[in-house]
Image 1 (cartoon, one colour):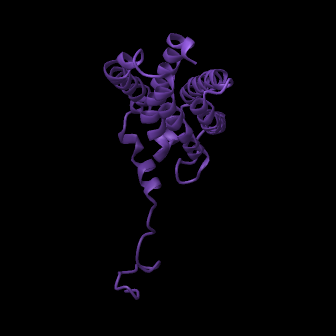
Image 2 (cartoon, rainbow, N blue to C red):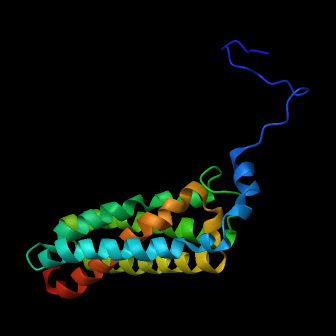
Image 3 (tube, rainbow, N blue to C red):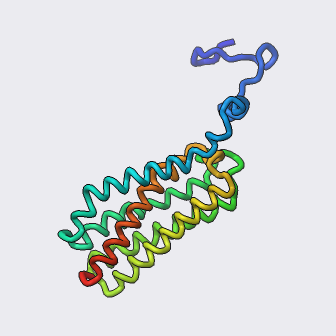
Length: 194
């Protein structure tokens, strides 16, 4: 049978039911050794090392010559996109079975960090008296959020159900961790310049 577009349509009587991509992946999961369920820590460590090396080569040597605002504004803008962590609560961005013990704190922790980062930008631009305390608040809260998310993801084996959202901890979290480190360096080395 052919539909209006000229595409072949299988009738239910003559064909086996089609399977979803997820069902196909789950059916042949026995072919993939369980050790590959634990690749995320490797991705996290490797990408953190790569981003740290890039920062060490290109940004950290510039800290004494740049105004703190020149370093902090791009970092705060980057962290303002952490609302993307809400993907951990979105059907289609994750597979069924993503542990709630990981998903909710990670998603809302990222959202709160994004709000703090975005709210801190005008304070840094204007040189407000609240600037330094808000940058400290953003940096401590954001760092603790990432470390808590890494810990709960590991404890509850969340990576196996992350689905397309896997790129967040594999790529973005290492970048975010390194930028938190850079922010701590700026806060400690350039504390008189605020």
